[in-house]
Length: 183
Image 1 (cartoon, rainbow, N blue to C red):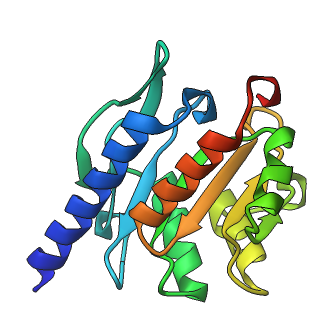
Image 2: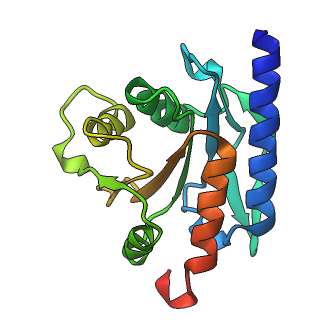
């Protein structure tokens, strides 16, 4: 049963990565690269969350997954998913994309629930994603969580969903809405 679940997670994530590689606007990829993750129903550690090894990057004007999909491939996005799942176990997938002020009104138009956190308010001794995601999920599960960055930290948008197909679909919807001037 566990191996069947792991195989299904891998297949779903691979399909979503393929959709993104084929149709996503490359301008949505952050400088640090992006990733998309999908967790098993009851993850105990990042080893129960699949993601793209080496992230997804810009290669010229193409969206390029650096490696294959594997469990344990991302600490950062895995923590986003696992923290969100503490508040809503159905939210098993997330991706990070480039932040732009111009994108925020698009989320309103798309009727997404949006939340943000300020890295300057982060208490000492906690991990940013654990704290930031938790602070946004306490009063309900947003579709989008963003921050405006900090010294040495790139601003970022995180898209959350029940599975990677939903997350990829929402990123692709956003891709069709942005214009050259927005980014």
